[in-house]
Length: 330
Ligand code: BDR
Ligand code: CA
Image (cartoon, rainbow, N blue to C red; front, side):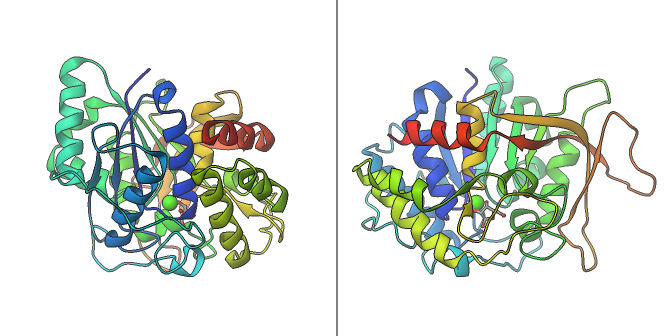
């Protein structure tokens, strides 16, 4: 099993994903978590990762957490507190964090860990569930670390429409320059399997939790089960995205499990199908943050300077993904 690092911005659905990944940490090879600003500010995402670790009974020795960048590469920021609550984990009912993050900044940690992975010939699988600022900053400072990455599985983007704007998905919109840099660094020739796997809204809007799914978590009777049920209940009541044309799923009475889809796929490898193709990140204009998709082994699209090879994860077995996540949390 390749070593697994999760970069995230908890966030209700990040928290759900983390609880599942921690529950299956040996099977997944989970060894560290890094956090970034996104759904809420870095102070909250850092505290929330610690609160989640506390709730599972793990400590810093078992799961180190590194705090990373407080703002996107080009500054400014956009949060999603309207969806996740003021502190990012509305409804979780988790106590304040004990313990602390590691002394090393997430970017420093990623550089050192990925260099070691390259030297040992044991590359790391990186899952990103927030804006890609931490990895992009690490790649700017140390481009050689790309050799320490087996693959990056990112909840980001959309092959169709967006959610924060009609064009852009939230994680891509918050730091499009970071996504563009990461994608360019991971680009591969046409005959090589893509190293960037994009779990966008096209997939995540087909994997939705309704009241019955929330009740299944509550029925676990554990601290993580109750926290997930509480958070998903609050998330569902705040989720205002109407059904999105052409993207299936996401009925009004259910909320998309964006970030858990990536962990669900690691747990149930047959539950998601991907299509190889290309992605261009729109950096300017009203469609800033849009991820333009093409499918197949074709050359870069005309007029797109950085149309890079990615695997679009587009088709999921929602029931299998949700069952795998529940089992891991249980
Ligand atoms: C993504 O945006 C965030 O609000 C969620 O945590 C998820 O990572 C979905 O667009
Ligand atoms: Ca997230």
